[in-house]
Amino acid sequence: MTYSGFDTRSVGNKDCTSFVGGSPNKQYDFILKAMTGDTDYPADACPLYYHSYFQVDRIQLNELLSGAGAINITGDIETTGSVIATVDMTAPIFNGSATTAKAIGGAFDVPHWKDEKKRVRHVIAEGPEAGIYVRGTMKDTNIINLPEYWEGLVDPETITVTLTQIGTSQDLIVEGIEWGKRIKVKSGNASTIHCYYEVWAARWINPCDHDEKLHVVYEGDSPDDYPGNNEFFLIGGWDYDRRETKWRKNET
Image 1 (tube, rainbow, N blue to C red):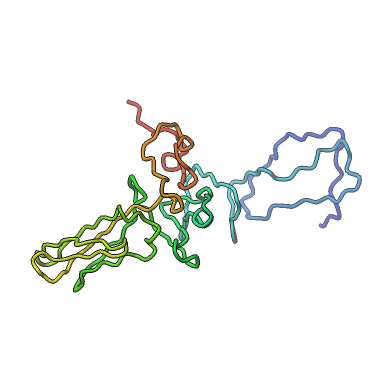
Image 2: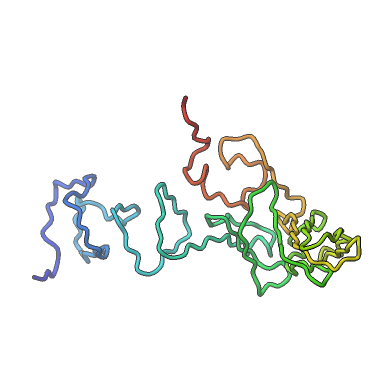
């Protein structure tokens, strides 16, 4: 059966506040976009509404979810694929302003400070600074070349080096750090250098403003009370996304 129009409406006894009833239908289907095309819409009928809010039990998404708003989840997120969480800070790096971080998870994705055609993606280690590190193995060389993208991104005065000798005692010494770009190592007993290295530095909170500092502990009931610029920080949720302003403590 097909319809050329809608069933006759009951005018004069409208109820615009009632909820839709019935039994749940577990078949995935499309949401109807209803257009009556009426030219004589009765003045005493319910006013036209669009779906500002809607409620369903399950959603099957076949292609893409996009938008400019926030996604608030109080339950679990289950996935059989990959979850990529990034903070896109294209605007704050190159024009000096900031946009709110749009991500959850321990990762950030920022423009390359020296090359506008490149980007840098890192996973975040927690600590009282915006720490950034590289590590590796040295053999038959006394130079550690730091990543080229560190220039302008990190405070060179915060660079620290840890060396772990391999195989033999080598009396390893950091001879110097040159221009924040490379580290010279020497052996105090003239041994051939073979070691593991770990280099840490503090990334600028705002590469455009080196006076922007991290407030590690501050007074307040929520992230909104942070005394500095909140736009450079990822606030995925309070207390690991439970949206609580205090730690949940066991009552004894």
